[in-house]
Amino acid sequence: MRACPGNHRGQGVTDRLTILLLTKNEAGNIGPLIAGIKRELQSAQPVFLVMDASSDSTAQEAEQAGATVISDPSPYGVALTRGLREADSEWVMVLDADGSHRPQDALKLWQARDEADLVVGSRFVAGGGSEVRGFRLWLSRRLAWLFSTLASLPARDVSSGFRLYRRALFADASPQARFFNVQPELLAHAALKGARVKEVGIYYAPRGQGKSKARVLRFGLAFLRSLWAIRRRLKARSST
Image (cartoon, rainbow, N blue to C red; front, side):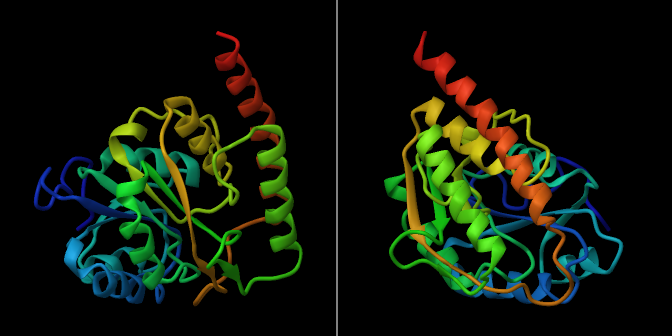
């Protein structure tokens, strides 16, 4: 049975880590991913919260793997923001549910938590890389350069969805972005809060089963719109 908001507390506020997974038709991927994260983060004893917008058996597979599932058909950015509020732990780790982010890299983010309030899994720093090539990788690199140059965000891989958040600093985040461009907006939120941000290298692999939901050109245009909005916010803050 799918949970209602507030019913996913598991062990309660003593939980240190919630794994937040946003899913849309990831049957065949979600179960192995949860099992892999449990294996890699065994000492952290994470709880799993799935915000699900699927029409397949993703929810059932996630529940069988031990996750709590909240049915939420909202766009990615809206569901992510809600998930950060719904989580009941000191830390919230978010990663792609399609198998493109490796469970073994989750341990690298977790081990870096004492040095940061936001840990970003990055393809563009030492130890990082990507098996996904072509226009999509080129676009990610160009966006990284634009945001670094024009907005001075505190991470290079601005579009990375593999992150570890200190929840208290992000529970009040209210990004305007509704889609994947929520990622640089949350980086801007971190900058405005004076949060410590650290990047660790991760490897980005092709998705497991199913088809990608990303639309590359729409993705790029949405990020560019966010870039100008973020510049205005940061400039307004620096002028006060």
